[in-house]
Amino acid sequence: MALPSSLPSLNARESITDALYRFVTGLDTADAALFDSAFTTDARFVMNGNVLDGLDAIHDKCYNLVAKLDTTHFITNVRVNVKDGESKASMTATALAQHYRHKQGKEPGAPHFTAGSRYFVDCAKDEKDGLWKISHFKGESVWLEGDRAAVVEK
Image 1: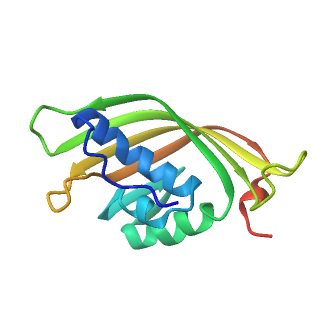
Image 2: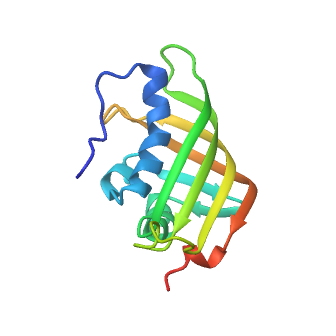
């Protein structure tokens, strides 16, 4: 089921937050179009010091790895900083990300990898489609638990 990238009933703050939700929901549902709609084409993605530049690299090294897993990403404590009428914004959030190998998420005792992280995100409004998109994403894990091999294809 493809999810819409545009939700016209959202106000500005909700639309900015929605960029982050499109990113993680795209991963969790393996919806490439939703995932890609969350980023500018020249976005920078940094997770624990690993840098990806541009949507193509982010899609290849993040989406293509994570979307084939059984995952859930929970986002909370979102704080948005934007001035009325501006086309740039920033936000912070806390995330819990759970990862299992494909089709193993429901298996008792299956290897898994979980991370608690903080996200620091810059967004820009795309005048072409009206969507707020991530222009710079920085994720820093606070803690990691489980088997890192669970995120590697067997």
